Length: 273
Ligand code: DGL
Image 1 (cartoon, rainbow, N blue to C red):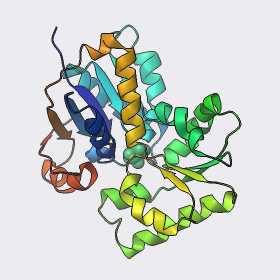
Image 2: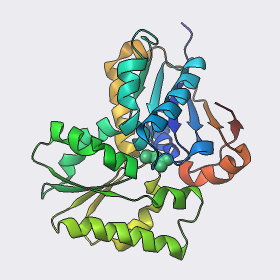
Image 3: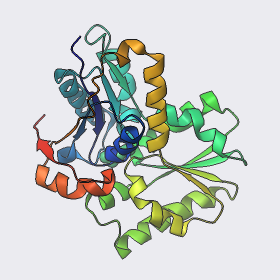
Image 4: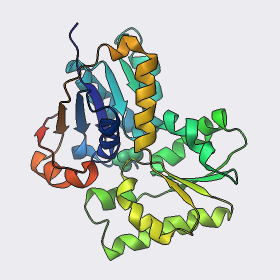
């Protein structure tokens, strides 16, 4: 059988924070990463646009032979995944699978809270889709979920301005707004794969005693579990420990910024979708 890498997709760099954790857990698998940096951020875009962009990227992965694609982007998972799974795969790509980052997160988030109140920090698109409250209610119906959209955070990260004093204003603003909704929030989920880069700044403005969750490890364990439960997909995934990177924008820029997300230097190729 012709085995192929697992595809990992994000609107830009954020998915690298997830890929890093996946590789930490499953280093033997091969992965192709694609960042649609030329069209990022996705967070403020309409459903139709996020769906169209995500579908194009998924089809590119399928042309590379990937049997499985992970949307390592909450916005794409919230706005495009269901349509891709329900409309695009059946009858066209019956053998392929596309998974997102929201489901594995919602399966566990309630376990971290003692008060039964959690906050979600995410892009406007993810918040407006209401996917988190809807999905969390399936696993933790009693859990109270408060969402806060942080539209400036991805641009700050993508433009490498997140360590500037200007960034502090926007980071504090959204933390304060979220915490003002309820003093009993004891767990906050970073519902955007770019946000782990902001973790030190976020901690600086958070009241003490709050558990801060980022998704990388959760998604990595979710993928490991999925592969063990789906041997028919697992056997199609190649395992040479080979990782390749592509961007729809400048590969020089991508390589210059990717290390802060991925933890080490990468060499990417450019592609036009
Ligand atoms: N990393 C994407 C997410 O998780 C960022 C979305 C964007 O491009 O705005 O939502």
